[in-house]
Amino acid sequence: MFGDKLSGTVDVYWNTTKDLLLNTTIPGITGFTNTLANIGQTSNKGIEISLLGTVYKNTDWRITAGGNINFNKNRVDKLADNVNPLYGSAWAGTAQYPASDYVLVPGRPVGLVRGLTYVGYYTPADFTYSNGLYTLKPGVADVSTAVAGVMHGLATGTDRPANQNAYPGMAKYKDLNGDGKIDDNDLSVIGNTTPKFTGGFNFNVSYRNIDLGLNFNYSVGNDIYNANKLASLYGPKEAGVYENKLAILNNAYKIYDVQNGQLVRLKTPDQLNAANTGASLPLAYSETGVTSTLGIEKGSFLRLNTATIGYTLPKSVLSKIHINSLRIYGSVYNVFTITGYSGLDPEVGVNDNANSSTYPTTGLDYGAYPRARSFIMGVNLNF
Image 1 (cartoon, rainbow, N blue to C red):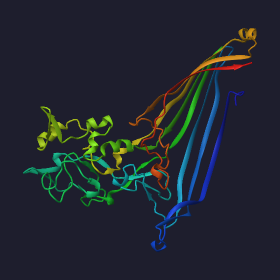
Image 2: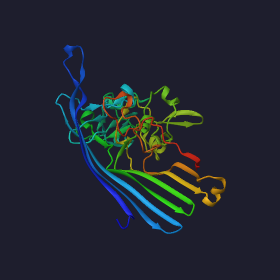
Image 3: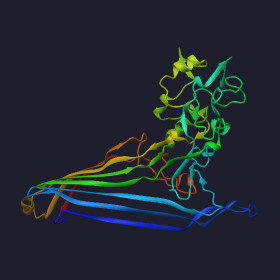
Image 4: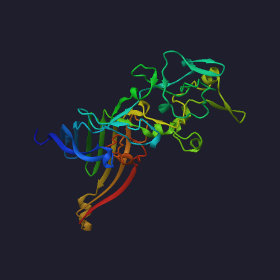
């Protein structure tokens, strides 16, 4: 269009994959508990638009710009009745809750994360404190043993009633069914790792023999399952204190303080409130790795993927040494990233099946190696 100043493409697609191999349960009399069978169907449909245009051009200058945007709808179309739609990433091994932190739901995309809804942590205000015991007030939900795990130094009957798990500082979750207990009935889909749209754009500017190219890519609307963050709050109560942890634990709730070089247990409400005025995370070192919205973050980003500047020597100079063209250039890869994600890199999912999971664990950030920033110098030489 406009005398070759603007060109582009529009791609519309609808792809259906039938007879997917999925795990299905079989009678135990066979000697096995499950087998693989062709019992699933997924589809991808969407539209991708790309444009390339000349913004300005004269004898010395040439400025071009291009970009693309892709809207993709991924969906699990159907599963057989005997297919277990729950599966896990096992980032916390056998101590993970829930063990199945991903779920396949017909009519919804692959990559749905399942867990509890985090609403902060218990404070002394949630309890009645008497004779050294913290007893939950009426209407405040307790956490089940499966969720609470083991908290170092919290002895039932000494710090809390024998029939209670909650204690100031422990992570607090939403009681979705209102039964007064945080358990399997309060699990729900808490994250969708599928972006609303993705794409990229580029700018290329040349002035006489100097050229500059900038290439961006982006993703909008996806969630990231930040298991690295959750793993820093998880760990064995003895050896865990000697492990490397993320710096965010500086803001975790604490029930101990160092006074005159000695470790002192904080017990009364006044002591706990005074020590945790700036706490933004719950008490660490639970021996259960709980998946919750605390680890679900927005993964939208804009990245300057590549920046390149080059200089091409004039042909009048090159002809004297019998060289057709000579261009010297320098490039920087992974220049910067604009994102609200707290992890190292919002482009996660290098391992789509963490710990040999049955199905894709998309959007999981657990040990994914971040992209390096690279500096490259080069020469293009043609005789």
